[in-house]
Image (cartoon, rainbow, N blue to C red; front, side, top):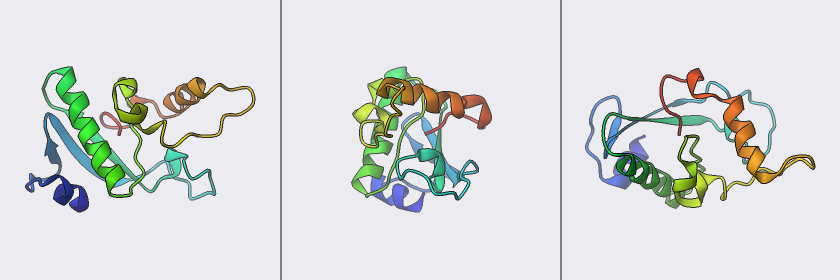
Length: 129
């Protein structure tokens, strides 16, 4: 979080970073099992950033998430969004940057659906990034 704060030139705003209408917070990934997995399997990445929109027009929220994603990518971090508006984000929210090899019976489109079903929004406090 400290790196992201410096990268975006944000002031310390308490337990979360304010990026436009978003409150961005970070925590260890409680879903990670530590088992060997494909390097693009975001469920095994060590950290999770959660973005909660306090207010703002949908376009402002999409823009703020895009700013966070692009800053992380420029910094060499792997980041992918899991939200209802992935298709409106750069690189489809990261799905295009980190293609999970589809099984022979799965199309690339169903891979995102598979991830979305596996980690539903109800399993976290708020929205997931």
